Length: 401
Ligand SMILES: *Cc1c(COP(=O)(O)O)cnc(C)c1O
Image (cartoon, rainbow, N blue to C red):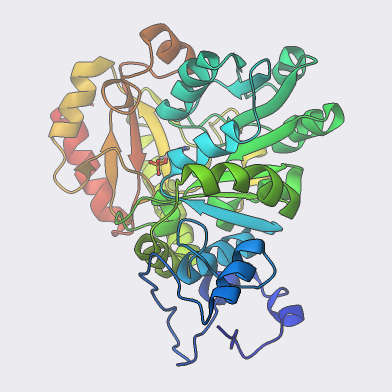
C-alpha cells in the first residue's frame, strides 16, 4: 500500500497536534480514498510460497495475520504516536488490555511495582490482586506526593505506575518529579493518561517512559467502542511489548480502530469544548455542594500543578454530597445527565463510584483513596452547558442542596 498523503515524512512529522489528529498516519490505498479505509480481514494472501516464507522470516515487508498487523489498526497506531510525540504505539482491544499488557510484558516474579493509590478500579485490581498472584510485589502510595515514590522504591523496583488526573478523586501527580525519580533509578515510569489524552497532556514531555490509554474514553469520545493503546520508544514497543502482545492476542479489531480514527479527527475540538463546559458546570456547583474536586478550579489543592501539566482541565471532575442516600437521590432526579459510569463521552454522564466503578475495591482501600459514600463523578459532554447546569440545579434542589 502506498502512502499517498501528498507530503513527505519530514513535513508531516512537523504538523501541529490538531493537524495530526485529522491526518497523521493516513496511508491511502491504490484507490486514493480521502477517509481512511476499513480493512476487515483476518489474513493476507501471498503471490507465491517463497513470499510467504520471506514475510514470516521478516525479510519481506508486509502483513501476515491480523493478530499481528492490520492496515487500519496501523494507521491508528501511527496517528496516536504522532499525537503523543512517541516513537511508537500499539493499540489493544480495551484500556485494561493495554494496562495488563504494559505491566506483564516487563515484569517477572521477584520484581516490585510502586503504584498510585487513586486509580481506576480495575487498575487497582491489577496492582492489588493480579501481580501479587505471580510473585510481583506491589506498594501503593499517595501519588500527590512524589517523595512517596522515592521512599517506596527498592533495589528490585521495576515500574512506577500511576494516572493523573486520577480516577475518580482527580488527584494530580507531579509528572516531572515522579518520572525524574524513576529515571534516576533506572525504573520505567508508566503513566495512564486516559483522562487528559495527548490533546491536553503529553507525559513524555515531562520525562515519562511509557504512556497507556483507554481509547474508549476521549479518543473515541462518543461512547461507541472499547479500545486501548500503549506508547513508548521503538525499543520498548518492539522488544518488550510486542513479544507479549503478538502471542497473547489482546488485538484491537480493525472496525474499532477505524471508529477511533474517526473519533481522533474531532478530539481537539471536543476536548476543548468539554473542558470549557466542565469548568462552567464546576463553577456553578462549587457554592452548592460541600466539596468539589475539579483541577480547573483554584480551590483544587493542586490547581497550579494541574495547569502546569495540562493545556485545559478536561471534561471530568468529582464532587461530594452527604452520603450514599443523597448521592443516589441526586442521580435519580437527573433528567438530562445520564446515570452512567462511562467517561470521555460527548454526553454528560454521572456515576456514584463507591457503588459502581469502585465497588470491587475493598472499603478501607476505597476510603483511603478518597472514594467516600457521598462522592459523585461527572463527565461533562458537548451539550449546551446551561442545560446541564439547569438539570443539576433541579436535581440539587430535589435533594435539598
Ligand atoms: C476506563 C479507564 C481504564 C480502562 O479502560 P477500558 O477501555 O474500559 O478497558 C483504565 N484507566 C483509566 C484511567 C480509565 O479511565
